Image (cartoon, rainbow, N blue to C red; front, side, top):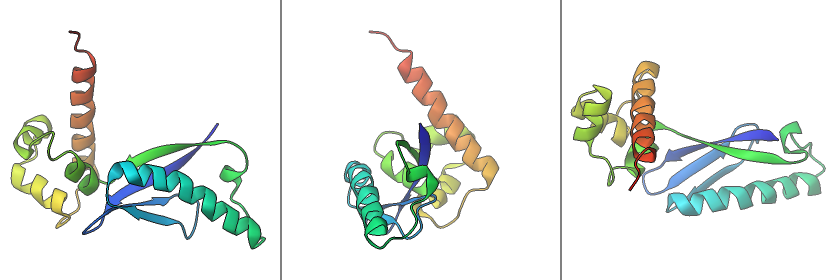
Length: 134
């Protein structure tokens, strides 16, 4: 099955998404849960519009496809700020809290090495939690 990448981001008031390879498609919703649903429905609506206008359908959307979700750092940190504090994330990543705050608010964008540290920290935490048995 072909994979379609959906990139999640954050605007001032909403979560937003765009789909790689589907020019002209953007979506925004108040919550992340709504956004995931709206993206799936919106893609089909967008493709219907392309068909009606006799515009070409990108190859990946011909047949079955699976959505793969990617977050930008600001969106990820905003969404999980009630679950993991910047202090805890600082301990996991080795990045100081102030810099993490700049990433979370969008004042600065992390370099690729910093993105990797943040991603590794979230994956490490997720693996630790997944290994717990009660």
